Length: 208
Image (cartoon, rainbow, N blue to C red; front, top):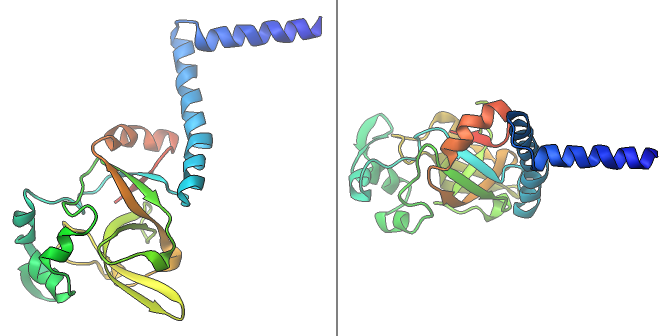
């Protein structure tokens, strides 16, 4: 009798969730979807991609390019205390136009994009790649590596946002212990959906 009651309750719950056409059923479906993604899909992807941040949504314009590559390459930058172009800035770092155009995401990316990360070891990160790292800010940062150094077996990086005039002071030394992963895939604009829900459900990490 007890087993029959349990079976009847389970059948009612199943019917309520998957068959009933009501606001309550719809709301429960949404909650279940969020829970499944947050606690099963997202951690599963993190395990596969070897990072605790497998999918991130871009909320800052620091990697955007205004117009064509040529227009961005000749746009304003800051070489020390002197105004210069992006071209001059990267040349002082030993990065030519040809080098840059071989980099991943050579045309940058935009607010609202989704970036998929892969957790390569810090020692495998190369100049030109786009990495995500923790900083003093609440959200991680996604910028391009412009120098890589190694000392006592540990890697460190200097990064710069493509859109920015120069590297911020905190980007001059990024130790490997704050490195979270390397961007490998861009999905344009899908992040706007995530941005709308992220603070409500804590589903995907935002990056700036």
